[in-house]
Image (spheres, helix red, strand yellow):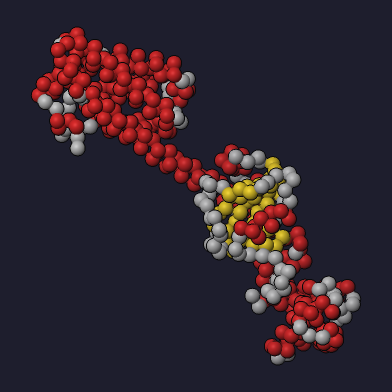
Amino acid sequence: MDARRTRTDREWSVLESASEVLVERVGHLTDLLIGELRAHSPQYDIAVPADEHWQQINEALRYGIEAIPAPRSAPRRDLEYAETLGRRRAEQGLPLDLLLHAYRKAGYLVWDELLDIVSAKDPEALPVLVHTAAQMWAAVDRQAATVAQAYRNTEEDMHRRTDERVQALLDALLEGQDSAGLVARAAAGLDLPEQGRYAVVALRAERRDGREQFHRVTAAAGMRFFWRMRTDYEVAVVALESETGLAELAAELERRCAGTGGMSPVVSGLGELGLARRLAETALRTWSCASPDLPHARRIVRLDERLPTALVVSQPELAARLVAEVFGPLLELDPGDRAVLLETLDAWLGAQGSAGRAATRLYCHRNTVFNRLRRLEQLTSRSLSRPRDLTEMTLALDAFRLSTG
């Protein structure tokens, strides 16, 4: 309930009479308040131009004084101006606590001046004035609440716009754009050095524990992650400290991310993020060539550990020709028979050429592994003991997986 409803006619008369005098002293009160604010903190002069500061305080005081005796139905210009002032101070960067201090200090000055006016004009009315103190301070509190809310709303809008601008800059870097000043603006917005150790990760768009908004950057020991969404996957730009390597980054991603991902090599600056993003996407595509059944397979793959496979996925037309050339007769077999032979080759390669370990993985005898590999050699007219033939067989296996998704 508005406290002004309970005012008596006597109270209205005292407040109206005192306010008329008080309005004439607004310039003097403005000078007093400006002086006290400057003594309290130099930030007022740093954030707000002197002429603007004086004019705005003068208007705020005038509207506040006019609201003291105003009827309840009157427009609250003091609150409208408080909202305007809150937005302006947020844009100027004056700390909110200093803005609220100014409103409280203005309230004290106005109240002291009211006491002086009533004491001089009508001393017997002082008890009446004191009776209205709670109402006046309630009005000051409402002005302060209004200015604070407007300040916070504006600050949130500014943060959102800043985030959007920084996101756009980061996206431009990831797209490989090279406009003048782009790297410098992105470095300033992200609070990162232009030259440094960076990697990019492309992660399948699955649920990520602890997903955060862009402006709340994910961090880990020696790493800072800047996440961006793509249509089918997420991209993380990772700033690495000097002692942090890709192995630590891969382990951290394995721990926090549920999906599969590809990781670029380390690049030496923000200007190389476009290249790093393309290499990370290539590393992610090598998952189409990965064996889904091997227990040692990692969910996060590094391009520098899968370069031969990356060559295959980067050239799908040549990969299809490689499959046809190397596995031609094999492709004519019954699908079940073909799958057994390719699974055996995959297990043997994963076991570093050990038939015994491959047999353990396949739950068969090692002689069965030898027999299947000899049959594979006969069908492809290639020998797994010749390095060039082995390379062709390995790459053809990756290319076959790529073609089958």
